[in-house]
Image 1 (tube, helix red, strand yellow):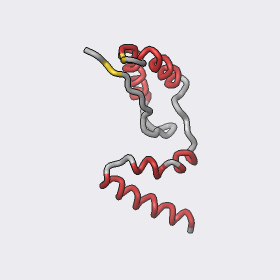
Image 2 (tube, one colour):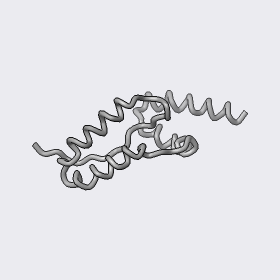
Image 3 (spheres, one colour):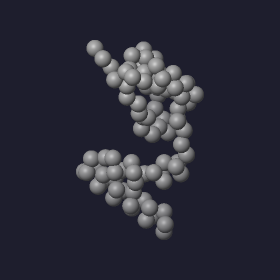
Length: 96
């Protein structure tokens, strides 16, 4: 069996939301299986473990909101349309 390296960040988490069990599960999976990824498992695994143990990749709400249009574009068309309408309405209310 060959495992290929993949690297991605999880979706956004809000401090105080989610559980430690979820974080621990994914960090454990990375620790056990990350090393076997080809060709960059030996490089990405220590970096991912270090980042996870330090609290992950942190962003401010302003940074997330600035990039929200790009995130919406990644969604499927029905979800994109629904969320786009919600965001447009929220922006209009914020400007008022």
